[in-house]
Length: 245
Image (tube, rainbow, N blue to C red):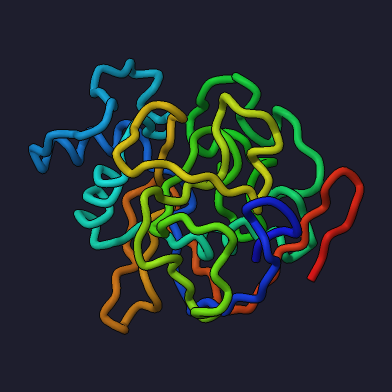
């Protein structure tokens, strides 16, 4: 996990237990149903005044607390930063992005293209079958932000620092350049912010296996994907230079 430079240092090995991850980001329609059913007041800048053409777009402009409440209502949770990076599958073929080393408009929404309905870009799917991990909208993770990675406390199911000012967001967004979409790219965002970077959330997960008292049900249009236990390290290719463990 991690990269050889910047706030993604150091590259380190991580062990994760078996977990489930939804294939798609949460949509405006799904979040609207939650808000209506729970009669919850949204803290962020998200509004139900979206057109029918936006119903299948990923929900954005939601605070960390909004995302967490939605997940709680489903009996799920946000993924940890390590789980999110695992889902990109970048370590499987030593890739820069979930799908490979090159990027184009056919893989992801970025460079000011605006959002797109979830699951629209089949060539941007990760090896695990998770869609839109890069681009479209940022995704909240459960971890507090720390720089560099704390590799001394735990390499098994790491959950980040015990506290902090900002949460980790991953995946980059539609308004940013390709660099922000790298599988190892990390950013920090105050949990109360809901609009500056259009952060989204999705891929809420359930741990670890059915029958162990944990949920594996889902509310997205695609089934949850079973990501098996494994040790992984991300190898980042940057400007033609190989950085590895």
